Image (cartoon, rainbow, N blue to C red; front, side, top):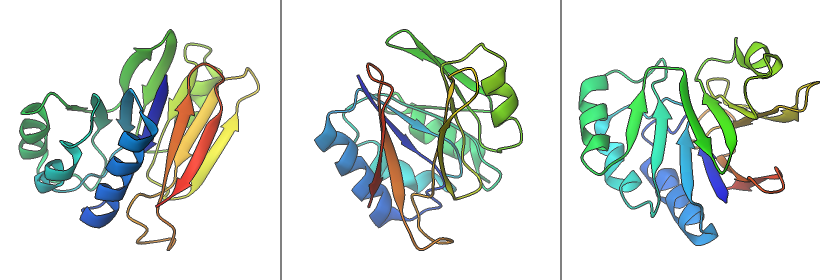
Length: 163
């Protein structure tokens, strides 16, 4: 299965729309969002995903109840970090802040650690083989480069996609 990974969308509706189109065109079966959606109205674009969405709150997600309710209205979930999900036999943990990414990876409890917050792409394997993925920023506000990632759970290959 292909898993779409995004983070730090920060209300950038155009890039969220591009991310949704990218994921739908690629036939992803699940999307993970590592936080900083920001406002509930971003759900208007995210509801166009043709698969489930699971995300975590980031430090800039202010109206959490509104965001949670809006996403829940179409079956998506957003949780206080960390969030856990098993997809195709692979154990994922999703966080926003990066401080715990390496420790979670080295714990041996997960196949994939997804994080955001830094707005910088980070795709690598820990010493035990756990995959660590920060897809960069969907918004493109800080780096000038809007990106998402697509992970193939069979091969564990990650493709970075510039929006």
